[in-house]
Image (cartoon, rainbow, N blue to C red; front, side):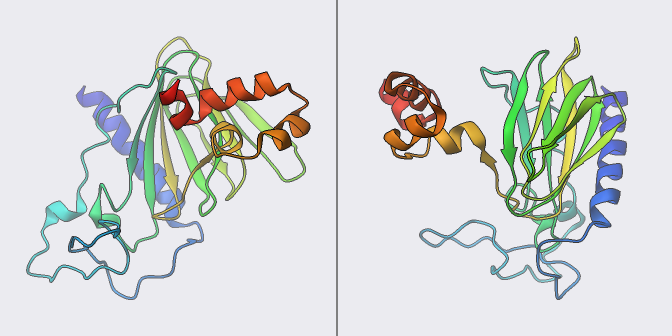
Length: 226
């Protein structure tokens, strides 16, 4: 366990080094740091760049430490587990223009095509073999099987994906140059967002029944109701 933790720490350092030298998409901070002071208002995000900062007397070293990447998150039915790290879970990142994510994929599992509208991502394979890539605006795919220790960059706003092609659970550490990168998963965006069914039938050349089946699968409300 200690060896795995040290390896993950080294991977985090490499990702941070890469991301810190990438042009940030968030505004430059106007102070060294801002550990937000949580306040509760209706419809207010618990951590936001417009929250007041803690005073220096309230800040401790622990505000700049996060230990949640030591272990995987909870695996879904598809074999994917993620641990997002942003100012909500790690307040020390607030105003610094950074966020991270640990992804673990069981053999054969995928991280489906998705994109981050507000950030470039750097993905470092900590363990395993992962088929990884992205698609540019000309529909050209840039993909390969990445081995342990390799890193790939996914340009801001471009669709990217990952699949574990090895025999063991793969671990990937991602760093993004925004504290709020956003995420749009293509299957859910297309079939789970309520786009007009007739439009989807015409766009994909599928029957009403096939579109309905896909909408049930990717629309959380419809899946729950059925």
